[in-house]
Length: 365
Image (cartoon, rainbow, N blue to C red; front, side, top):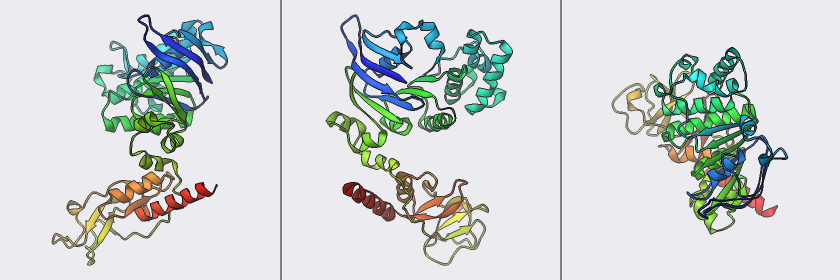
C-alpha cells in the first residue's frame, strides 16, 4: 500500500502544488489521479518515487517512509512510464526493455531473455527486438515503455499520462492492453491523466484533485459518477455522467430477444424490414434494408449498412447494451457471445426498464 499523510509540496516561489493530501492507494489496484492543469497530480505521483521531494507530511510504501530509503534503491522497485515513452533512441527495443535488469546486475543474456518475454506480454512482435524507437509507431513505443517499466517485476507502477500523445484509436487499444496486463499481473498502479473518461475506464478508485493540489473526492468510479460531492466534481465529471455510469450497472437482467439474420450470398428476403447479415460463423457483417433491395437477388456486401457497436453479453454492462441499441441503424442492438457470434438482440427500451428496476431496488434498500 502507498499512503499519503498530510503531504504538501511548496515550491521556492511560494506555489503550493499539493496541499495536505491524505490518501491511501490500495495494493494490487489501479488508482487514478485526475484533474485540471495545475492540480498537482503529476507532482503527487513523482513524490512517490522521490523525483520530487515533499515539503511536508509523509509518504509511505508498505509502511516505510520513502524519505528514509535511498532514492536510487526506492526507484529500482518502482516502474515508471511517461508520455512518449522516453526511450533511449540509440538502443534497440530489446536493450531499452533490458535497461533496469542490467542496472540491477543481471547478466546480459538473462536481461535480454526477460525483455523478449515482456515484448510478447505487451503485444509486440519479437521481430521488432532489433529495431530502434524511431522505427516504431507512437503506440508501439508506449508498449515498449510499459515493458521496460515491468522488466524487473516491480510491485509498483507509476504512469504519468502515458497514452496522451497517441491518437484516440491507439489510446483505447493501449487502455485495453493495460487492463489485460493488470488482470494477469495485479500490480499497484498509480496513473495520472487529465481525461475523466480514461480515469473512469481504468481506475479501481479515482482521486479528483482541484487546482492547488487539494483532494476534492476519492471514490470508486461508479460512486464518483453517481454522487459527485460538489459542483466542482460535478462539472469536471461532465454532464453525460449518467450515461457513463451505466457502465457500472449490471446488464444480467436484460432479456435477449430473437434476431432475424441472413447469410452473405443468400437470397434477399422479401420483407420490407431490416435484417442482420452474418458470415458462416454468425459474425455480424452489417445490416440489409429490405425496403432498399437495390435490384440484387442475393445478399451483396456492397449494399450493407454498417451495424454500429455490438453488445458483448459477457461484458455485463448496461452502457454497452444501450450503445449497441442506439448506434444500430435498425434501432435493434446486436448481442454477441465472447467469440463474436450473434446470439440475439437488445433494445433501448429493455435497457431502460432494467435501469428503472435497479433504481427502484436501490431506493427500497
